[in-house]
Image (cartoon, rainbow, N blue to C red; front, side):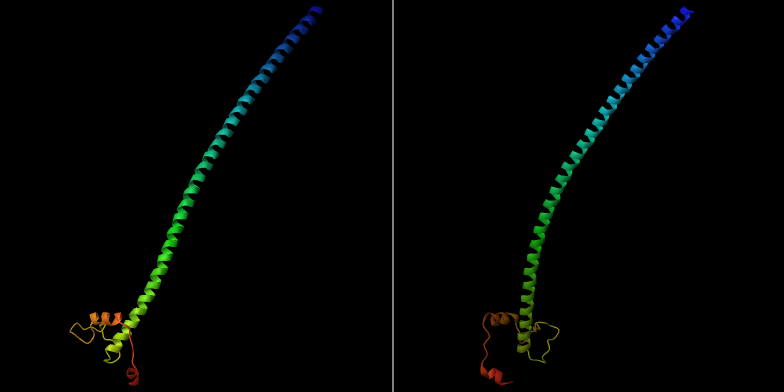
Amino acid sequence: MASSSGTSSTSSSMEEGELAALMEQRKRKRMISNRESARRSRMRKQKHLDDLMAMVGQLRKDNQQIVANLTVTTQHYAAVEAENSILKAQAAELSHRLQSLNEIVAFLNPSDGVLEDDTYGCDGAGGFFNPIQMAFYMSHPLTASADVFGEY
């Protein structure tokens, strides 16, 4: 019986050695697998970081373009505002001149105090008002004598 118990302890220690080797092999496999997984994870993380950095560069470039466009648009807006102010002032001046000319025409054509259809009082048939004469009158200062005001 000693031989049978010796055989069983030998086979048992052999199984334990094989089992230990198998466990060691599995442990190595798991360690290699974990290292490979960690390497892939680092690569994914690096790729994500590279993508984000590229996106940051593109967004900065887009932002610079937008700022440049905004600057140009602001300059155009300021120029248009300045031109608009000048045109408004010119329109007011021209409106004032037109009103003054209409008053002069009404004074020179005292028909009934109201201008007819022809806004400038020139009927084209050699009437009292002549635009060329008006230019002559506009180039000379208007003076009034006391007898003009004496009629009123």
